[in-house]
Length: 429
Ligand code: EPZ
Image 1 (tube, rainbow, N blue to C red):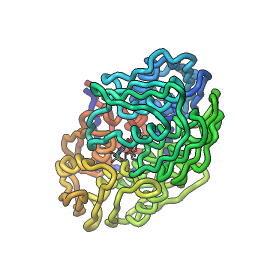
Image 2: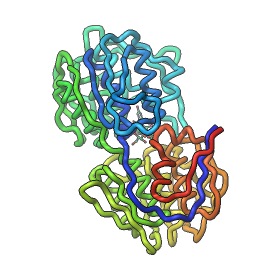
Image 3: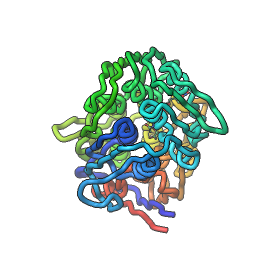
């Protein structure tokens, strides 16, 4: 299994390109199930999760092609890929596939809307918490679906098609908002989604669905209104830049020191994280081509954060920010409110010399003067990259194991960081 080797201590400088967002690309790819015509996605990142979802969609009958180079080749960004679901050949998403990738459960919305039926495995537990699917089920029922759960599968039927309805989410959910928005595009009449997620990825999906002929208003606010149409067409849409990749590298620069332009990054996608970095003493300057992040000489100030749905501080940057705070001049408190079990990085950061204690959903981080390299591993993507960030400032060598987590969501991580002067390499085998 591949590992990443980092020798800490080098400041970062130069330009680091930001890729298309994983969490925008996945729902956009799934939206291709809604039409028999071709959906073309520009700026699709080259990631293990994107490849895995391509295979899953292939099982349902989606043909995939990519412009220019072959999909397996390295260094492909930005690339345009085409997804065509001319005929849906299977409305079942089996356990073997859905359990590997939670977002593949989201096919339930388009399959049900277009085909009147879907049989999708319950995703099961995952490393960051229990992550139930009750909101998807209640929401689809509000659109007239009949839903049963049998043998670990959700059986959803709407033989006469879905009908518009009102659904108020009791809790904000990105995935359930994606799914209900997609399902409602082909329902009869009007659907109103209240307390909907406002994440930029929701707006990206709504814009793409609109380009396909859907009638959607209010995406990006907490009330989304959808007027159903009888069919959707093909379209060409762009994937937004990855705000979590942007925040991660901003924290890497903050941690290692230096001056880097995050090329293609959009400040409006992660304002709360940028404000938090500025409070920590980091220079954050939006430019015409991206965001410049610099820390030259100044220390890292401790800042308390609480994760929240957008536009609050994102849970997907919590681990990375904790990595940064391990070197702050004082105590910070980091509270996780989205997932109940997203502190697996704490023990691993401690292996590098961090001082962190847990009090329920809050981590209390006492900054230390130095971290020391060690072998570490993590059980999810964002936790893994927090160890990379800590490794950039640790003395000596840090080896991050289980690199496949990083490959799920960071395109060419070691190449991008070494291009800015970090000593980081992939060790094969
Ligand atoms: C998306 O997951 C992201 N994944 C996650 O990123 C991200 O952490 C999360 O949103 C929150 O921002 C993708 O976009 C592919 P939720 P999602 O439904 O949609 C609870 C990463 O590292 N809930 O917004 O699955 C749930 O348990 C990943 O890239 C229910 O209770 O998250 C959680 O506590 C990890 N019932 C909260 O809502 C439901 O039916 C928010 O989850 C659905 C969710």
